[in-house]
Image 1 (tube, rainbow, N blue to C red):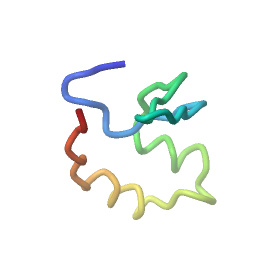
Image 2 (image 1 turned 30 degrees about the vertical axis):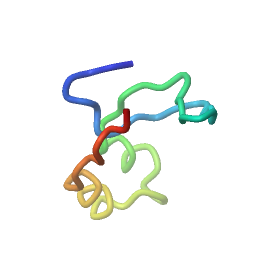
Image 3 (image 1 turned 135 degrees about the horizontal axis):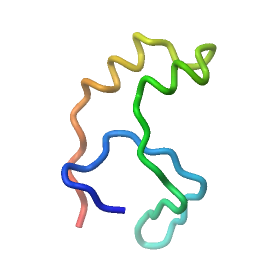
Image 4 (image 1 turned 120 degrees about the horizontal axis):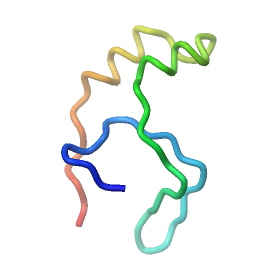
Length: 60
């Protein structure tokens, strides 16, 4: 799954670790969905802070 620019948030089912990490069965999500689906766990303030963070540089 490649997109340009890369998606800020994804949800995945499986994480495979070899010499690199690979996510399997993943899809992009919108941050606001987290507070709609699990408001007891994800607070709006925390989600807003996550959206403002810069993405780390990609490893090659």
